[in-house]
Length: 345
Image 1 (cartoon, rainbow, N blue to C red):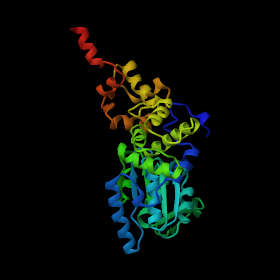
Image 2: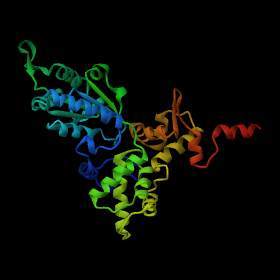
Image 3: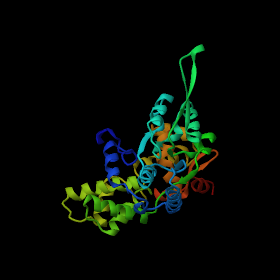
Image 4: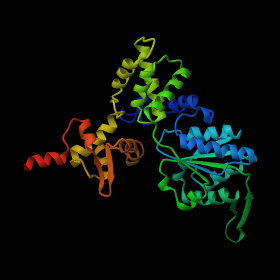
């Protein structure tokens, strides 16, 4: 997909094919190189060492959290640490049970099967996965009618690593078959600054510490976005013939991308202003907000809302979404309730 086909509002949120190749080269190979997510990394390190000492495969692992926080990177690190091959796919890509059977039967002992967006598996495919995860067997039917036969196929012992942005959407039977659960949360600006510094060395970009922190502050707590913004800053400094990226250059480059000091991009601001202007600050249903923005509901739920909720620009209630006083202050506006009080005084 070319950059011309991506709307400016979605550019920071979506991962293009070019980004995938770019991010792959910047991914850490070992747990020691992985920055952030200290609790998850420590516990995963213990599980890896224990499995290696017993010379047996890991239990099945479920990684959850917003997009771009390192779930795929951790899956590849697990394979590297276990000295195992990894087969990567996604929930939507496995349309039929036959697709899953083909993948499972090609796995060797100790291999890692990584399924991204595992909550989007169809129920039929999921049923096949239960027995494969629990007993390392699959039953499939050949022929039809009175000639139908069930054949049991034994699989080699493997480790399933599932990644999801919506752990609550997983069915209880599937969730119960995972032995290890790790939730990844947003990164601090300081952690992102370390990631940006490391990425800059790989890319050959000369950048100072304040500039790394400036990019980290505007990266929505997400390493994927931090690396993407670093690339845009690199382009900006190259075109303007700057030999070293300092805070002023980084800030100018990010301002040109329409990303403000809080890391909000055009779509974030449109989302918040829609609730403020069209729904008096809320509560508003997500479908109504999506319709007013002409955006997909899932894009707003998965890519926009998590960061706004984390930074307290937005809150969810049982009646819908509401913007907070922080959001009003960000736009230099008075809260709707305060304005109403002034009218009646």
